[in-house]
Image (tube, rainbow, N blue to C red; front, top):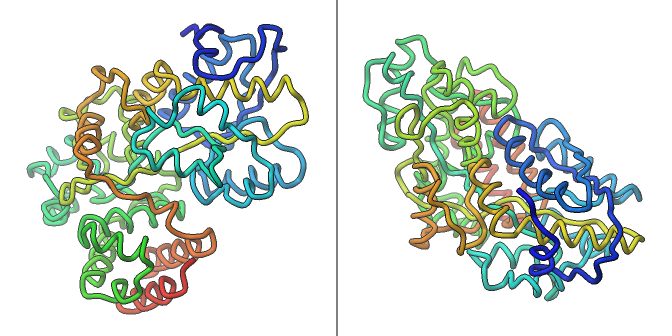
Length: 409
């Protein structure tokens, strides 16, 4: 895809044609098959300009990559662009004056008019200035089901979480793992959040995460959430893999019946040439509450003492949010575009489900913006402990969770 200087100048402040070519190191944690295919769309397009994308992929996950990214920036060895989740993750870096102000790029590109939902741009904004470019909408509340596994088990593919739990014994009897789950800590936290939306409902989710309501966290409705989480951990016994995409592969290959994972899992199914609705089923909101949280990924641009580098950074920011790149990137990533004015006629059934939910306005704020890093870490630690230790009871876990919420910031 050739993105011309004219196109970029239509969406950014391209001061002069004499801007020097620049090599930009871009860090991210997109290393699975589907993720690599998606990020390569950004790289190819940027390399078609006078500039060069120097890929700085960090293997692992966001939990592995973020400390490395932040350490480099604070240590005076910043990359030129970096993936982070927009919101509070970069808040202190912005406040310290370490991130490039993109307000002029956002104004020239009319970001305020095209970013949908608007809270994605608000999450990139501090004190009226824009510091990141949102590139997608990712929602974690999805259940992915293997048709091959259910055919082997001799039962119908479930249509919601409750039917799925009922089908688990048949999967076990067929020698299959009911629930694929990797050992990365964020995966268990993601599972809890997805179950919280499906079982507890959206009002409870908002009351706990947004209002920090400890009474809601201690409610019988939350007890049901913790019980469902306990049920889920028993369904994952035998899932001895580490990374999330390895767990996805268990579903793709029919070794596991299902996975609780965000919509980015769709990219792995695509790389495996599987067809939504034929080889696998995707259930947003676990088929119970069809709603999506509007989190996602964004790119920040650490400040550089070099006008040529800064100009190239702004070109890359404009490119990432351009209509062409929003289509090319998100079709491969499995995420939804942040622009409401692009043609997604090529979307598969799962993406169309997400688009319909988004169009209906059935959205929630993403949990990544709800808590400080300290509070989020406490919750993640609790979820990991409960998932991996059967002696942690529903009652104990809920009591500890309630105490965290009571002191959340």
